[in-house]
Image (tube, rainbow, N blue to C red; front, side, top):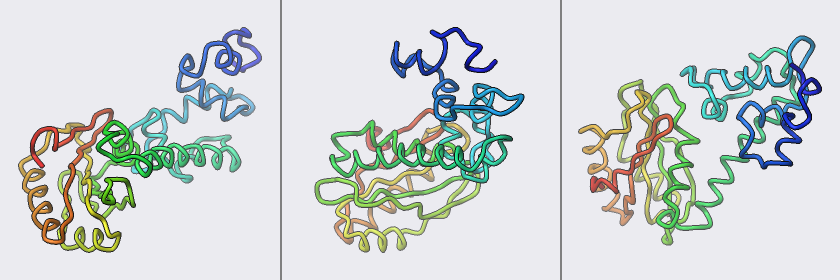
Length: 231
């Protein structure tokens, strides 16, 4: 069904203006960005295809979370999605990431724990392999930079404390937030996660850099090891 075939009050644009963006489904919001479909494929159908698109890493995770991790090559899989629409979608997704990063740059992460969790969710949750990343913070615990430092298999990541220390010194960081994802879907810290946290905490303490937290993320969840008393 095309947009023009829908009753006026069911069309995404009119619905948004009348009831607010929260009233729209994910597919309807995407349809507003796409504006038009192609011959034989309505814009809502195309939007639904995007939501079912596997993430950039091939994890098979669909929905908005998977789409936020899609690349230009992934978007090319959708028949009828031309360069202009692909570019627009990629721009919107990057703006979402930058908006969260800006909040962490302007406010201490200790004042915005949910923003920090959302930030890591956006960056790591849909990956099919483990990624270990670090958020480098200034003396007021505001974000200086984020770097993905190590990548591993589905079950293990090799993390080298020396490299983490060197990057902290490079950014002149006063503190860090560690983060990694669990592709298995569970955010419960393993014994190896606990040991790694303590190893990095000790190594960074030698250069007067504090480990504020270690966040573990999976699809739709995030766990703070600091809140569990494990940092």
